[in-house]
Image (cartoon, rainbow, N blue to C red):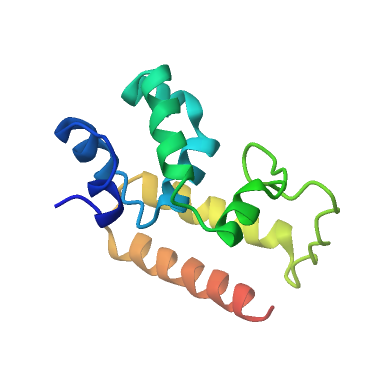
Amino acid sequence: MAKSFLHGLPLSDEEKVKLQSLGAETPAALVGMMKASPDSFHRLLGPERAAEIRTHLERLISPDERAVLEAPVPAFHARGAIVDKPAPPIDSPKYDLEERERLFTELRELRSRGDASPEAQRRASELERRLNALLDES
């Protein structure tokens, strides 16, 4: 079933289904989508039809909703990064990085050999224990 605000608009059944699938609960929400991504609506409905439908929807919007839609949209970096302030400092780890790398490298090499002997298993367990103890100290 189409959203109730779509019933009163001069839309084909196909257009109602397309617009309903977008999940907009109000005319303002749908106009906001159209404003945010006009090219998508041009592809969905055709440029002229999208403009006609937007005009019909805008007639259903309250003055308060219109003010929200007309307010300037804050600019965001394309990947969502906050670029107007520097990144927070990253604390240095409280453990010895060289020792961590040495233990981890030895453990990785031991495991890559596929040695299932008891001695290799004991050595791997010892390396894991030392690595965990080193990391837990921080």
